[in-house]
Length: 421
Image (tube, rainbow, N blue to C red; front, side, top):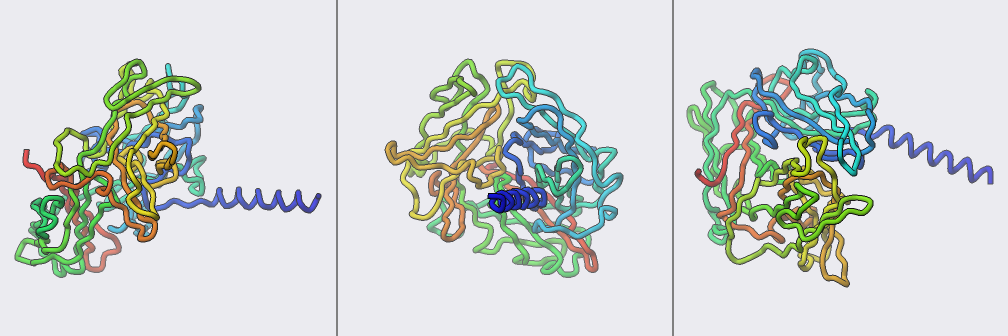
């Protein structure tokens, strides 16, 4: 009996040690189930892509909720990364002015809500932490000043505009894909000479701010004086997918768009109308926010601290697209990550897929994706359909590794749309 108790103690101790030694990943990730509603965007526009221009007054707004309530001792720092999201292995002195880390000191308690929480926020760059070079950065939040206790990691970008980006979105060059795909061509215009663009320049494209859609271009199709052209026939071909689905959870007093039922027991519950497989034959136009979400409530005045939480029930009426895979519900609200929390479960008696997510009051865009567990590929069209007419936002990033330099500069950024407005 004593030996069993000692073994149990050692197992628990080892588990605690393992948890305490958890490390940050270079990705958008929430490490605690009690942390909700992580937001990071340029303050010039709510829910915009988290990118700012070096040496300007532009700032990023970062916030999150802790459902445990009370006040916790949260610290944060930022780390410079390579174009492909690995550590640049630079000293903080190389990329930061000011301190290496600082506390998150702005917080407020929730009010008039069934779910109690504490809302934390900060704006940066600030007087304490100010990046001084361009590139990819990872924001790290941890507890009690201990980086081995990660809470949140979020990617953001700082660019120094040294080149101009001219985008073009056209139908796919593949005849069979012309009604479903959007091909992106990019011309990079530069004033200063680039000695070896095939080695020193990297072009990265992304659709709707979704990291799963990143495409890396390492070799321009044509190199001309003052310009690099990326228009290879077989590259940068994106599935147009479909407009995002959406629901309105701004009020607990009346049902918003796509809400079938709502009730309150120990928590607020919202039942959405059953979603159907979106692979229709024809495109149907509707307005969406390209995957974004907005915290709003129509029951109180203050959005950030007087918006309540609710258990949102998603239902999807479809057959599984394959024999070995899973369906997930994704959007900007969860950084398009695929976790157990947002994976749908199949209930055979009802012949439907279900998921239940705990979300804050607001307006949400979402879509269903299929992950093939055999190949690891994620498909956002097999359940949504794919049309060339779909309106999508694209992000283009140009990285430059100067000869002899130890880091990747972000020397160009462009946000563009496939529809001319």
